[in-house]
Image (cartoon, rainbow, N blue to C red; front, side):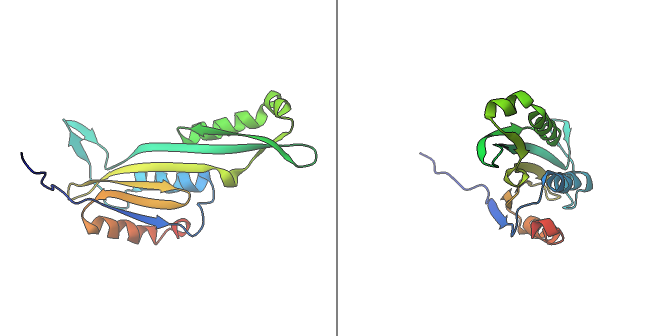
Length: 167
């Protein structure tokens, strides 16, 4: 019987943020800027003859919390909604906030509690050395996974140090 032989060494690194990313607009600007600006010097590549972008979103999700307060400002209920994109998140929040039938059923006025919202986006990146790695963002942390070249982490860390929202 054959032995398993290690083929690669992949690593994971996490940066815990000192304060959560303020809001969905800040989060979206950060992620969109990475995709459009490619600050890590990622490179395009092909998979089975199909061109791939240097940096692409591989997964994302956005959760909003809406609370319902009665006339005494007591929370009498809440709802959460999860959306697949920022646009869907904004549309869902607008629709829920305008839903008077739901507010009546809940027994209070709808209030979007933006501080309780959750955002996640994972970017798939292709390094100039040929590695595919992932960078995941949430409101509270940034996680770099599936990399083996320490230069990848150094590049991302240097970039992150220039972003006040990632302190």
